[in-house]
Amino acid sequence: MNENLFASFIAPTILGLPAAVLIILFPPLLIPTSKYLINNRLITTQQWLIKLTSKQMMTMHNTKGRTWSLMLVSLIIFIATTNLLGLLPYSFTPTTQLSMNLAMAIPLWASAVIMGFRSKIKNALAHFLPQGTPTPLIPMLVIIETISLLIQPMALAVRLTANITAGHLLMHLIGSATLAMSTINLPSTLIIFTILILLTILEIAVALIQAYVFTLLVSLYLHDNT
Image (cartoon, rainbow, N blue to C red; front, side, top):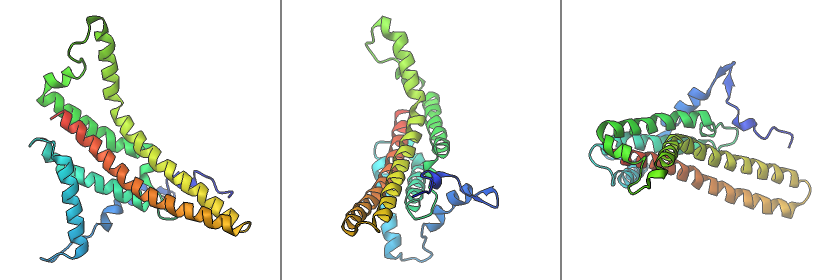
C-alpha cells in the first residue's frame, strides 16, 4: 500500500541507461511468422485479422491513400501489442508516456496535412472557411479552424495516454484494495477480486479499442487530405 501510485509509469533504466527503446522494440518480436507453404492456425488467424482491419480502414481511401495501408496496419499492431504487454505485472507501458504518443501522432498528422496542401491546396484551404459564412465571422472562424487543426495531434496523443493511464491506475488501486482486504474480510476480498478480474478483461478490450481508434483517426486525417 505504501508503493508509489505512479511508480509503474516511470521510464525504466538498466545500469543508468534508458531501457524504453528496448521495450519499444520488443513487441514486434512477438509477432509470429511462418517459413512454410501451409500456415498454422495462429498465422492464419493473424493474417485474417490483419486483412479485416486493413479492409475496414482502407475502404474509404482512394489509390493514393491506400499506399499508407502497410504503415497503418503496422501502427495498429504496434500500439495493440504494446498496450497488451503493459497489462502484465511489473511491466512498463510506453503508451502511457505522452511524449511517445506525441512522437507517433505529430509526424503522421503532419505528413497527412502536408500531403493535402501539396495535392489539394484549394480543398485544404476550404476547410478553414465553411461555405456560406457571414463576412463578420470570417476572421473568427479562420482562427477557430486553424486551432482545431493544430490540436489534432495533441488530441490523438492525450486520448491514448489518458485511457491507458486511467485503466492502469484503477487496476493498481483495486489490486491494492484486494491485498489489504485479504487479511480483514474474506467475502469482501472475493467480491473485490471479482471486480478486478472484470476490470482486467475490460482493460484488454480498451487496449485493443484505443489502438484501433488511434489508427482510425490517423486514417480519417489522411482521407481528408487525399
